[in-house]
Image 1: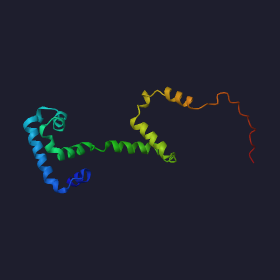
Image 2: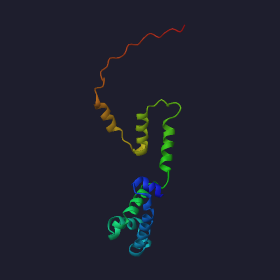
Image 3: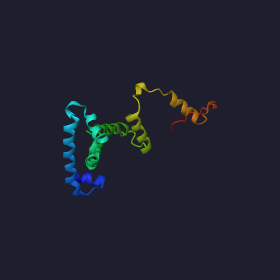
Image 4: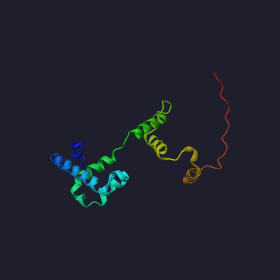
Length: 148
């Protein structure tokens, strides 16, 4: 973990014991002054980052904690994304371009459910984007070819 901290922050690995000391100091402060058992964990973590007098003493450990808070708890979102990708890129339509695939996956991930979607605005936008051939003449009907 210290190696990841070193890579992300640029601090030297020799500051590892300092980070450990900061961690113990932060835990002692939290137990003594913040009463974590009687508060929500969000309130408990909010205080050291914003209001604590000693927060300058914990710069390294607070930076490490912020990095750890960025990590996902599980990989369910990624698994769901790959499941969606399998549904979009099937054998029958494997020739879809990358941009179209990205657009479809973005809509699947971030768009509203199909039952709630109202396509009126999208159709009006498509219709007004360029002139359409409303009064196009009927096409000629061609004579059917004879089979040989």
